[in-house]
Length: 396
Image (cartoon, rainbow, N blue to C red; front, side):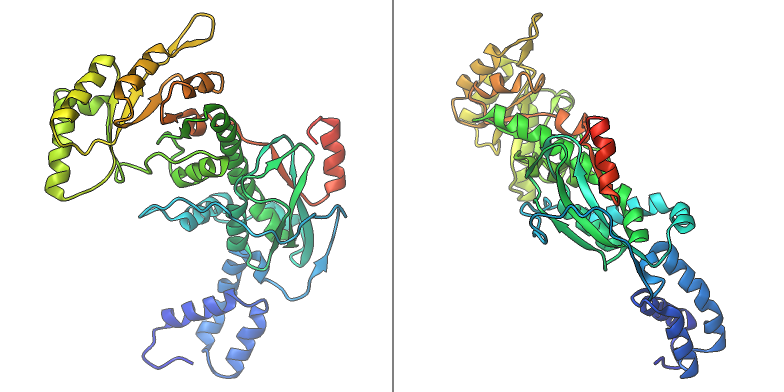
């Protein structure tokens, strides 16, 4: 199996991988020893390797299985394929790495001590997803990735897909397999799904109200969850603004101040893109009608890479809770379709419809991702008891 030149470390890594994908590791060890394919020193280290595999992937521990099935309430359309909406692209983002980090954060250096103390390693169960409030479901595809990372043998089935509506009390999916694996994955799965579903729910509501304008999120996302948050916006029916600092030039107030004025900033961008032979979208933030006119005058006289004008804080709150959009509307009329327009500032669920009627192309809202209200979802093995409790607390 191994050549004489291979190091013991390499041999142990190979054995660890072999054991990590097999459910009867101890049998493999004895077989390899009997066949003189591993030495006594490597044999002595195998229990440690097995214990690490058990800690991280408890589904690898045993052959014999106990099966427990609770809650006969079934899935209406098992095996529904997802996702319909793919993760946004990003040159360096590692979603699998984020998932592993989330699981490692939860497991620490010991793993799930409660699971190991209370649940037999060989027990199998079914657990059902339950929506506890109305909303848009998001994170189904990510949940499958997490379950697979914890235990590839788990079977996950859905009656809905990302972007579908759920109502309070609806069972919309189930996962079956080793109880240890399901319970270990549970909280990480729900944390992602609840956050994503909250974002998608608010996005859907704002996108419907904003029509004919298109709703965008911003870079005001949770650190390390940028693409997860932006994925949820897509699932909710919005569009993505720039992914980061690298994929779009966005000249904001601090750039303008540092450059010595809005025209200096635009001119510098035009020169830089030309020197670097780069083609990408360019947006400039304007805060007054005077700045809008300056930009339009520059664009009429010079060749520019500018594609969009942001109209920032041109929605003015009124004492009665309404908003005055006359300044925004005037700016849109000045631009007159020569550039895309984006309204920003004072965008809420209450104001977005009025803003959308001004003729702007886009409406951006940081609240979609920075002020997330999670959608209440649970994953329960004993669904009958969960429904009883849910009805008692008006959450099912």
